[in-house]
Length: 204
Ligand SMILES: [Zn+2]
Figure 1 (tube, rainbow, N blue to C red):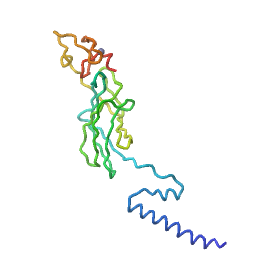
Figure 2: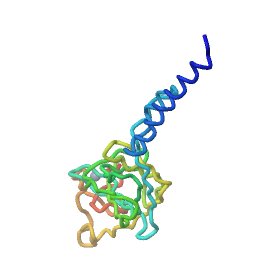
Figure 3: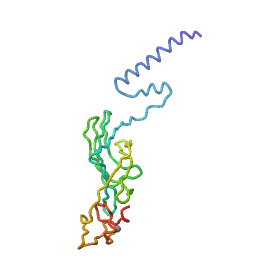
Figure 4: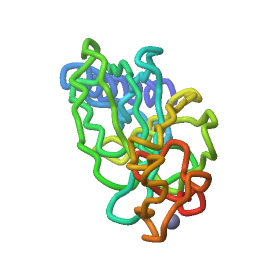
């Protein structure tokens, strides 16, 4: 067989087909799956948006204890700049701290593209993984509409003590009932920062 002729026939065929694929991909903006197949590589997985999440220092990231019904939960707030370069908007549908589960109500929001204004993001989780008035350092996980997870650098949350009188404890009325278990709470048993009146032991 005259191999030089076979090569001459085969090369233009391959280049012709690959060339068309590249041009069509460039024009349509589609991934080069055809070429990947040609070279024996698996098709590209669905494109995950690269979301940049920069947590801003003011207002500071905060945690506090709240409740949904009788169940205590950890409420968190961050002020963050979110940006991406995808053609489609990214919708954030769930936010939680690494090692916890989302809990309570979260209002999804949309990140349109690279120039969105910073957002104040409120989210709640369980279990309550912080004691007393400690600082809490964790990564924040943002889940988009496709279920893709975007994880931040570790974020340090602080809290503000809630004065007992704000929750109805005064010298005249030294005991109030716990929001979680309905038993009376003495001043010493009152959780330092829960926005609800609750025993330290009931906030978990
Ligand atoms: Zn209690």
